[in-house]
Image (tube, rainbow, N blue to C red):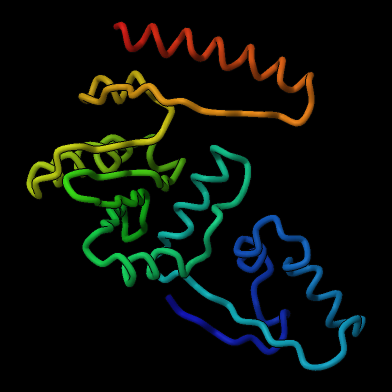
Length: 204
């Protein structure tokens, strides 16, 4: 990670800055440029640009935006901080192509269990390779066997693919209370339909 102090927002590429600012309008390049040129805020303005040298944060962010429509909730300091605080209890699996990271998987360990809650994937390059399957499942499974991990927990979605690789579905209880009656009725139908699908998969 590289931290650089910026004297004026004009010294930074607009697209690079806005990619880091995400959906925060008041952190956008255009807004900060307006503040500088119109003197909306008096006094010296100081900016700090944190660049992720490895590009791992970018992979996590692009994947999260593609699936959820919002930016990854942590900045470029997140992965270094994880390694510093958790040491060997966290493993970051990285696959590269032409020196550029195209897949990032964050794995947490607790006893004989591993948890894989965070995946970052280059949407374009993953289509021409098997990096999603290899880096998200095959490599962690091999690592788990070698290190004595007996259980691996993954997130939701692509259930059929996970079961073909030996995963089983765990029944969980969840309490949801939308604020409006109409929302509750709609959610009840969605959850019921999803429950029918999950029960059929667990029987199969």
